[in-house]
Structure formats: C-alpha cells, structure tokens
Length: 479
Ligand code: PFF
Image (cartoon, rainbow, N blue to C red; front, side):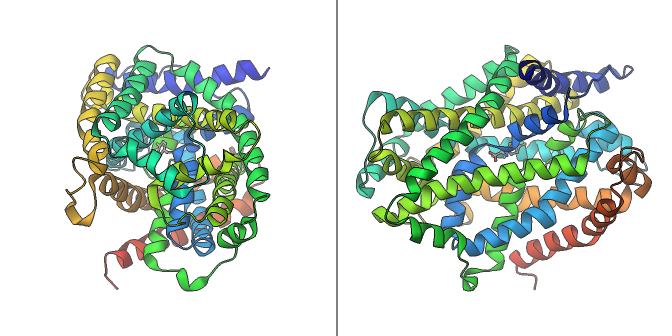
C-alpha cells in the first residue's frame, strides 16, 4: 500500500538520523536499522530531498542568466559526468557504513588518522550557509502563497509583477518576518517530531507538483512566444560557453541533487541491501532533471511572449509566474496551488538540511535534539537575516562584489559542494577498496552490473575529480 511505504520511508529518514546520531555519542551497539520497504520508497524519499527550490527557482534563473541552451548542455555534462557518479558514491558509502556521515567516513577510512570525517563537518557548514539564503527564498514563496489568496497578483505586465516582487523584498520587515516564519516552522516540524508527517505529505505532493507543472507547460506552450522560449532553452549558442558558466553548472548539479555535503550518505544508509544502487540513483537524477526542465518550459515562453528579461536573476520565477497564469481559466487558483506545492517541496528540502545540522550538533557537541534544533534555528535567524536584508537595509554591503545573499549562495554552490564532491569521488575511487565498491554496486555479486561498475570506477577515478579540479582551478584563474 502506498501509504505504508511513504510513512515507513519518512520515519527512516527523520527518525533514523536521530538514532544514528545517538549511536556514536553513547558508543553503544548499533541500533537495529531497517531499510526502505521498497525500491520505489527509496527512490521517492531520496527525491524528496533533491526536489526543491533548486529545480523550480534556481535552475530557470541560472539558465536564463547564463545563455539558455548552452548552459543546459554544460549542466547536463555536469550532471552525468560528475553529479551522477558522486551521488552513486555517496549512496554506496552510506549503505556500506550504515551510519551518519561522520561515523560512516570514520568507519570506512583506512586509518583513524586520516580526517575523512571532515567531509561531514564541511557538509554541516554547507547546510548552514545554504539554509541562510534558502529560507529567504522559501519566505518569498510563502508570502506569494498568502498573497495569491488575499490579492490579485496576476498580470502580464513585467513592470507590475516586478513591483509586486520588489515591494516584498525591499521591505526589511516583511523579508525578516517571512524568513522567521519559515525558520520557526521548520524548527517546529523537527522538534515536535512531525517531520515524518511533513515529509510524507511532501512526497505525496511531488507527483502533484509534477502534474501541475505539466498543466502550466501546456499553457506556456500555447503562448505566441513559445517557439522563442523553447529555442532559448534547447537551441545552444556555443559562444555562450565559458568556464564561469561551467562552474555555475557544476554547482547547480551538486545543489539540486543534494550532494557534495554528505547528505546522501545518510539516505544511502537506509537503502535496502538488494536495492540496485546505480539504476535507482539514475532514476532519481532523471526525475530531478525532468522537474527542472518542466519548470524551464513553464517560464521561458512567458519571458519571450511578454518581454521579460531572461537574465532577471533570482526574481525570475516570481515575476514571470503571475504572467503564465494571467490569462488562464482559474489562473488565481492555479497560482495559489503552484506556490503552495513549491512551499511543500522547499519545506521537505529544508527539513533534510536542518537534519544534517541537528545530527551534527547532536553528535559533535552532545546537544539534545531539541537544544540542537533551536540553537541552529537561532543562529540561522541571525546569519540568515543578513541574507534577508540584502535587498533592503544591507543592499549596499557587498564584500567581494556580492550581496551576502549571493555570497552564501556562491560559496556553497561554487566552492564547498564541488570541493566536497571532489573528496567524495577521490575517496570512493582511490581510497576505498575496489572490492567494497564492487560489492555495493553488484549487491555482493547478485547483480550483473559488471559493465556499469567498470564505467563507474573509471569515471569516479579519472573523469569526475579531474573535471571538478579543472573547473575550480580555472575559475580561480590558475590557468
Ligand atoms: N536539493 C535541494 C533543492 O534542489 O532545492 C536543496 C538541498 C537540499 C541541498 C538538501 C542540499 C541538501 F542537503
């Protein structure tokens, strides 16, 4: 029954992190761990962390800013040559270690002196900085949910939709208010132990989000600018390719798949022994890609029909969507549903991010879960405020030429996640014994994944680390 596996998997994700965190603190015999009930359960739960604002908000605006289809090509290369192998690596490490990030890396490291557990610590830093700006964007989504109920936000006039958005983000009070609402909600979900319920709901709503995106796409494709929008998204102009764009594409792949910070190690620790890791991971990656493309197909026809700026940046989703729904029957209902479903997807992703932090604080600083959650939320309110105010009070404060919102985003996607992914690939390709990798990818020899294993080992040893290294060094101006 779908209900039972949804509930099962969500329990495993949220309750499981808790069990694991306590396990190493008290150094007791490992708690009995059960796996996802079904292969589909593992797929859906892992998707619950992957699908979020990365797909609906970040993918379209970065594609718009970096030249459309050419960027999409870079993004596809980053996803399949780096993202997929790193995700398989994290999942296989998780299933081999059957514990949280830090314990897993300690367990699997050839010597206790090698500090591989630092991947977990760096992951906690990434989770914190991602939350600092993610909560602000989630706040905008929440504000739009309420606004679509209380006023008419639909318009095809770029000036009008821009004004609606600016009125929200340039008001320091509203920016902070919505971010804090989001933080308190996420903190509450975690401390009151209803995370399982929320995650279960989120996962049930992901198929609905998918259907709604399809409806919106049909609407977008009937607009006069649909041809131009699709050409922008799918007809590459290779003169737009640059290493800067490559780094951004790489960072987006990591961000969207929730990898490079060890979060997927925790998910992998709950995958069943007979689950086919490469094929399930491939399905996660393809579904995640599909949601992003659907979001892109919803947005770009509107951009070219009504004269929006494709490179509008972080506001792109918020200024274009009111135009998609403007001349559509029941447009007001659809825009409300769209932002509501997006808020659920974002909440699912945020719960998994905060879980990383709470598990880390619980394990490293021996804090209770409740204390860990509210200290984390408090610190996030403090640091996150600097991101929330970066369109108003702190707009003029631009260290390294970036607002703090952009800086947190840049440091995580373009530095921390790729570096984390690099080390995970190196660990699986060069440090872990190949027999261990083979055992995980063939389920102890029961699957005939031999060709897949050979390709995987080659890519994870040579291609993924090299690509990440070249792109990172090049963006630092080394070449
Ligand atoms: N993958 C999520 C998204 O695309 O919105 C963001 C995210 C969630 C990143 C959880 C990292 C993570 F651990």
